[in-house]
Length: 324
Image (tube, rainbow, N blue to C red):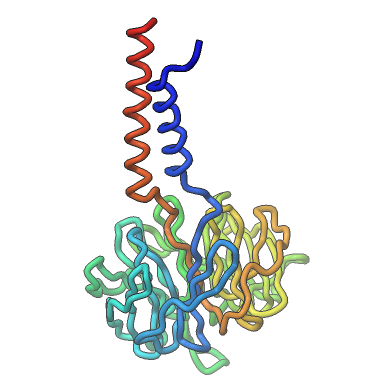
C-alpha cells in the first residue's frame, strides 16, 4: 500500500525540524583577552581568530561571558570592567573598581566576581547585574617579606558546583578556597624546596578552572604546568605542560582543556586524559584569560520548525487511530 500524502508530509516535517533544531556540541566560541594589545579576540570552533573588541580597554586581562552572550573584560589600566554586545559593539563601562582588576567569573547568585589587588590586599569583589560595586567578598593580607612586599595578588577565579570559590595568587603561588559566604576555607601552597619527592611547587598560580571530573585545574606562569587538585585542595599531580607561559585556561563544550600561552600567542588544547592535542589557535598577542560563550541554543526559526514538526506528528498519530 502506498503511503498517504498526509503521513509522508508529517514525517518529513518532523525530520527537518529535528535536523535544524539540534545544536552541535562542537560549535562554540572562545574569547581571549590579549594583554599586549589591549584587545579581545574571538576564536571559532575551527581555531579561526578574528578581532572582537578593543574600545576603552587599557591592559586587557580578564574576560567572561554572560548568559545572553554579552562579553565582559577587565581593563586593568583604568580599573574598569567594560561590556560588549555579542556582536562586539561597545556597551560602555559596566563598573569602576577602586584598584586593579584581573580574572572575572559570574557566580551562582548572578553577580559578577572580580579578582584584584589593592594595597597589600588580595581581594575578590562582587558587582551586581546592574554594575554596582557590592564591595569585598573575600580578601587575603600577607606580611611583608624579603621581596619587599606582602602583596597577595588574586588573579584567577572559578566557582565549584557547591558554590565555593577558588582563587589563584600569582605572587605567592597559592590557590585559595572561599565558602559561598566568603569565609576562608584554606589554601594550597607548595614550594620547590619544601615539597615531598616528585611533588612540584607552584611558581606563580594564574588561571583556574573546574573540570568535568569535578577537580580543580591551575596554571603556573613560571613553569608552564597545569596542576590538578581536588576540591578539598589535595594535590593530584601535573595534568599537562606547555613550552612557554601558561596563563588562562578553560574547559570547552567538547570536554577538552584549552590553555593560553602568553609567550607564543597560542591556545593549546588537551584531551580529558591530558593528551596534548596541539595548538588550537595561533596569532594572538599576549593571551591572558580566556572564556567560552554559553552553549548554542536553537534559533527562533528552528524552534518554530520543531513545534510544527510536533503538530505534524500529532496529526499523523490521530490519522493512524482513525484509519486503523
